[in-house]
Image (cartoon, rainbow, N blue to C red; front, side, top):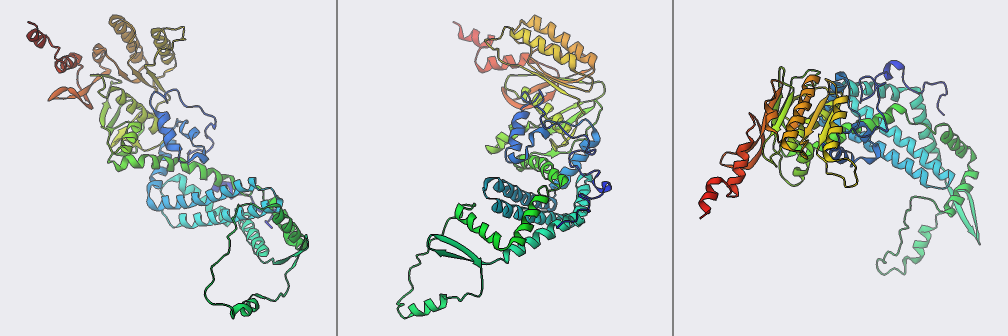
Length: 522
């Protein structure tokens, strides 16, 4: 049995920093954390749902809901991601995960069976699965080079744990019990309607004698009429009763099994169990972006900073890219940059030209960078945001007592009241329910407050005047095919707004320009 005086875990010096989610494990995250308000507008809800769906047992969604507030934690996660991307490290992590999945299946089976001795047998097998998973992981991790502090610290913890007297005693006790149980042999006697169980003694094997007797009648190989009994994974009442009788024949061995199952009920190390779940956050994200990467789209590790000079090269909307990858297509990428006093990107251009996708793309980039994840793009230097605020147009609700304009104003009031200079604000087509004059006036008021806050922002708008608001504003315009200005390229260009050109392009396509109309009128 395990040494009761042995430490339950390795020394504090080893276990002080073994989290793979935080450089400081005391930070943690809220298991009940709701999705941030920006999730739906930025399609992050779709991204997270798709990334976590293949791993429902790990309950990963709360981790994706918890953005990091410390650049050190972001770099810590990025290093773990880089390690996990290496094939030899990924193979070790996958092998460990398979072992732990087998253990979870074992634990689930214990909850299904009804008989105590059967439960104890499954429990013993679970300890042996745990032993194999831990020892296999130590061996695999020892053979690979690790660069991240997170995985390196866990490898040190795991090696110390596997060598501790607590673990070795647990493994030895389980292996000894398994051997002793396997050595038990017994005979079952059916006498009338009664079943008797007795120790197996030197019993003659009548099989050869029976075969010899019937050999002279053999004319050809007989058809096999044997029936394979189904294994339902659980004992029936007859099997359980026989096992109870066997336990009475070997009381010492079964008493040890009972004591082992009682004393070692919580045999799994908490840190190892936590690692098993947390590392799946990294693997889930890498698995999610793999199909997009195979389409030739880049992901990078951004240089996150608390400065306001931001840029992104070949960035794209992850949700859209994943959808198109499933259809065998590729999304269009875009670049952006803010430098010096520049803070706000105003996006104008034709409808269905990629403006809203651009806004979502920039928001996704900043949120995912704040999780420490590889982000879409060839390179990026996003800002470390304290919060991301979004205001996207929503349909009117017939039962609401508020008008759409009133709803827009109240939502903007809340955003401006909560935003700080460290926030990111993303606005998409607001004030569309009022007159152009009122929309221009209201938009300029909101823009003034955003500038005063010194906040980073992206504003998709139909009001071209906002694109030239001041030095803090950068104008980006939805691109069109120069050969046919009615065709969208979905690439945004940094240049002054010129909405009139698109109105003329649409008019020409539909033969509604002044010149064409004049020619058509007799």
